[in-house]
Length: 337
Image (cartoon, rainbow, N blue to C red):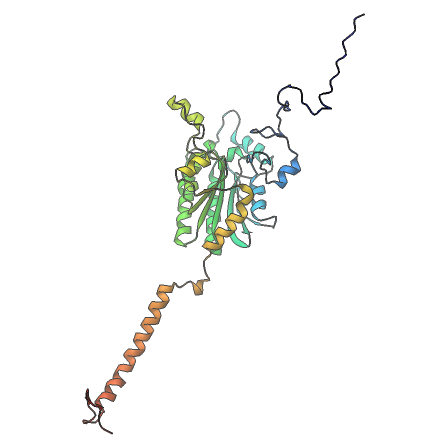
């Protein structure tokens, strides 16, 4: 019968660590960060706005979570929530389009965009947030209509429009009808511009395809979340097409900021306060007080000129009615009684 040798070490008592290399990390799963592999609990992620507390990696959020986050937990009023996707082309790939829509709705969302009227840091506005979990956030007829109604609602209430995008582009199951939404959303923004109302964009991961090629690139002020992919085509598609290796940071928010396509890269946890300050700066005065300083000065000047013109006839009569000897001599001033 063999006996195993007994090994005794007092290095731990002396404060020494054995040279066994770095500590082994637990294998990653759905509850770990894909960047740093740190584990987290669901309530921790919710408290931290779905941002990794170790490396600041931004996880995806649903559209309703984004609206709740921007509204600070206050209630909001949904716009166009009754609209549902139709199947005008009777499209079928691996499964019918209607089946795909039904499966996406079973996850809790009714479409790839939710528009709502809410307040951010006390500033009223309309927010259109995209839902990537609904068919990859693709833009179909309902998305375009909800965005257009959000712009109309903003014009009616005289408030800014904010959009948070997370989309793979136009919805291929609706064909040219989906591509038409690119023009439809731009026309809606033209109406917003005619009303002199600001449009603020927040680009989340990913923002690609027809969404980036239409309304997502037209913000008066454009923010982006850290690490968000912002490009018409993703790097994998470009590399497969051109057979060229792209930089590691191609299309990322930080790279787009360097090239001036994005005004700032803002941490999601700071976004409500940042938007609140921006809306406060862009806030329009009441309609009855919206007259510019230049127009007020011009009006005051015209009123003064009118008063002087009205006084001219009486002034000339007074001059004509003076006695003949009431003349002015530089040496002795006025003469006469």
